[in-house]
Image (cartoon, rainbow, N blue to C red; front, side, top):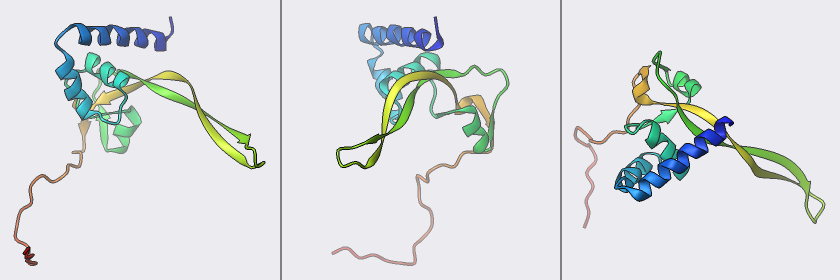
Length: 137
């Protein structure tokens, strides 16, 4: 059985567990942390690393000045494989078309599985005084 099919089978089992149990709230909470990921990949992340908060691939962590801690197990998700081809439209112009032709297994790691440079954070509180006063009438 290939890697993609193994992951799809795990995903099916995870979805069944959510619908038959009281995990729906947990799934929604994880989905809110990974809003750019598909429902399927959120489920795969939840099943493999429930506490995950920020995932990225090995090389992305390196670019961010962090490294994956030795011995950490990757979280496997599905990445789409896109095929681009040039077609001629009815006007005779070339148009580039993209189409999905499958999925592949990709390894990602949660920030808790990495060490190194501190990640930038959004400021949640402003300190100090402004020299500009704004009046709202």
